[in-house]
Structure formats: structure tokens, C-alpha cells
Length: 257
Image (cartoon, rainbow, N blue to C red):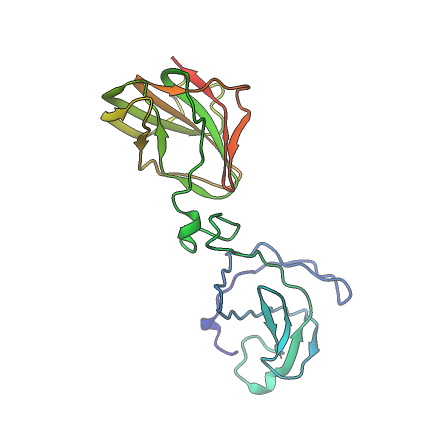
């Protein structure tokens, strides 16, 4: 209770508080707090304006629970991080509510709160499928994707027009490509292989190590180019949504001759 160095500050704001009859909401922590199954996490809410709580029965006793979480009785403090036992009131019960997102690691969906680091089985090497068939082709294709969560795009698979060894390049730019189809300015080269072995129309060719990070809510355009030609399918409306999953939305693009 009195060792401030053992705590991590996750919220520090000047806010308008609504007195004891209307709850005051605390949102947008500086960092996400992930609590693994079976783990215990402590919290300390401080304001010099004072907050309300209820008297408890036993410090550490169970107050409330649901299918995912248990809340226990704690204590009140009259001085911030005081080591004086007389500055604490115990037991006390937090008055308010606790919002949380359920982390369901292992369900093959990269849910809110899950990342590559805390749930690699759900969040690593995710794949969104584009068109399973292709009846046309050109030396390149441009399209954009929208990230519905923070992602890092790691690779592309594509189908070449013929089995051959040749040059393949991948360019990217933030936002939609419209207006920049013939303007190289603003495009960044993220993949460049002058002699890639391409597998033809029946077997996909992998382009790895792309490494483009796309923040949640952002749009990123890509241009895949090879003079050997790649295959694609005719679409319906340029820019319309073609495919999506829990992290990415893929939109129809164009062919580049």
C-alpha cells in the first residue's frame, strides 16, 4: 500500500466528476491491462476530491463475480501511498462498475485485447482470402485494405501467368491509391526480388517479409508488379468490399497494364 515504485500509472487526467449519485466514467487507459486466466491484478484509484465506497466485511473477501472475473473487498486510503497503517480504512468495497473485454485466446479469432505477443495462436499468420479464381491478368494490380485493428501485413500469395523466373516488386502507400495510379511519388518499395521463381496459375507464389504496419482504422494501398504478369479476377465495382475478417477488409482494385 505504501510502495509507489511497485505500481504502474495507467491513467492520469483532469476530469469532471459527477458526485455520489451519478457515476464518473474512467476510459482510455494509457495501456491495455491484460489479465490471464487464474491471475490476480490489483488497482488503486486516487483522487484528492475523494471517491465513495462501502464498508466491507473482510478485506480480500469475494464481493461479486461473473463467468470471467471475481471482485474482492479492498481498503480505503486517506493519504496517497502512505505506509502509516492509521491512514487506511479496511475493509472497504469499491462502489462503481468495471468494464472489460473478454479475451478468448484459442478460438482461432484474434479478438479485441489479443495481440501477437499475448495470443500468438489466434493472432499470428492470419490469412484473408481474395478471389479463388482468375481469368485475366496484367503486369500489376493495385488495391487497398482497411485495418480494423492494429496489424502488420507480412506476406502476399499471388498467381503468375506462367511458370517462370523473373522480377517481382511490391509497393505501398497510405490511403487509397486513387489519383496515384501513374504517379510513383508517395509509393514505397517494400519487396524487390529480381529473380523470383513463380509457380504459374495453379500454384500460388509466396511473397514474404513484407512487414507493413497498419494502425487500426487506417487504409493502405498496395501495388504488386511483375513483367511476367500476374492473374486476377474481374470485379464488380472498384473500391467495393470484397472480403474481410476480424482484422482486415480487402477492397476491389484495378489491373495495371
